[in-house]
Length: 242
Image (cartoon, rainbow, N blue to C red; front, side, top):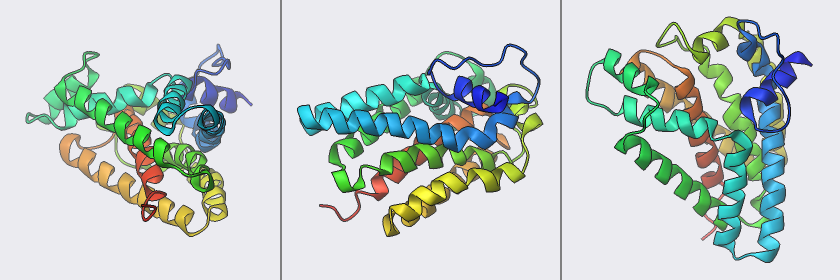
């Protein structure tokens, strides 16, 4: 259960402590549990969405739900998205882009990226119907699964959380980690399967872009993947509902 505790400690603000005797590569060894952690995050978020939808107008319920979603993750992935927006979109050298991504300060691209992703998620949550509300579970689980195949891409820098992740990661985790999002997708029917395909397509585009801009992935790129895949999965369930 050490890896499970590590996964919850890293990916959530739930009262689960990371083991005190941290070893190099622990974040990678915990990766097999990331889709399960996503499922738990999605379940909490879905319960909030369900409860707030009973007492608030759609947009208020959506914003409250999104607030809880962000608090559950400690804004971890949003931080990665903002850093990637600042660094990957900068017109400069690879080395300078990596420096910008490491800088704790946020720039104009980062602020814009945060605002847009939060608006998209809020709008999607406000538009979900009860039938498709379980897409929240798929979005949270699939997004964290996508970190696993992303780990096969070379690292852009030899240090940081991305390097620790790569040290403990095993390719077999991808097969085990795929079980949860695949089961949820098939239970949701054709839209669930479509959401899987859309999410994986988004993952591929992000990885191609990251390799073209910085030569590989970092921990921040993993965070950007989570945020964007969550958003596109939710949007998939809204296609044709107008």
